[in-house]
Image (tube, rainbow, N blue to C red; front, top):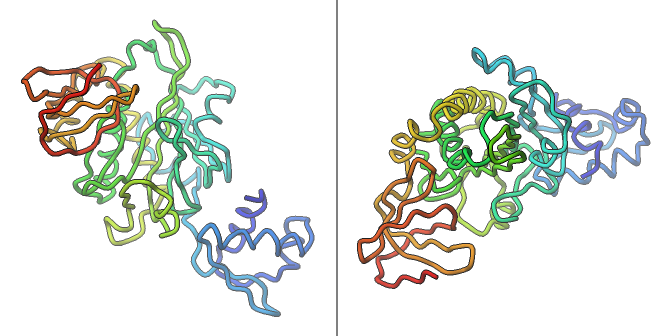
Length: 331
């Protein structure tokens, strides 16, 4: 995506017609450059009107991110969160990991568009301009890497709380780091850590939420997905949603720093999408196990009851709903 596309679309967001010559003058480029750059809007799901003698019009503008609006909706000590909004970046997680560490214990970086957004296990996070909310939060944690087990589950609780405050009922938590609605993926979490085993640690929490995905983007995703527009039937203000997530996340991180996952286990289990259900879990080595989800440990490990009654504590794996079977393949 050309670096001038979002600045041009922001100018056009007033809904008025703007002659190409005026747009070119505002950005100190040629009229031909404006024309070529705006051709990139359509593949991103942004529909422009072009009328001879009048110029360009953006009839429906994206709900642009605004750092000032986000900050205004933060509560209490969460107002101390440093807020950065970029038009484009390769990955908000990578960007925050590489940025100079400031004195702020929490820094949030949100981007209108990611060219290489990442999900779990190296998968690309499919996002769309204005139709997704993608951001990362850097936390200077007093805990070491060894004490951060289960953090993705705690973050899931924060996201679910915020979604409920924004009118999204019955969002469910999928172990270890997805948010579902009616068994379709709504949001995902990716946590990356730098530091020592005993601390402190730099933690980057990446979160992606589907706001309103075009059909062509959905077609590129290899699992059932949903978005906030489908769930609520109306548009959700991304600035308000991000602020609510930051408010909830601020409280959750304070709790986690003191008590880990222990006081959040009940709430997570209450909203577990697969509690007491038969699951197939694919392990990192490709082997699979089949059993019933029986809650989580304080470490965040998923407890699975095998057909013979044994329980396994799993710290990683890909989970899918399954029919009951007596076959178990475990190394």
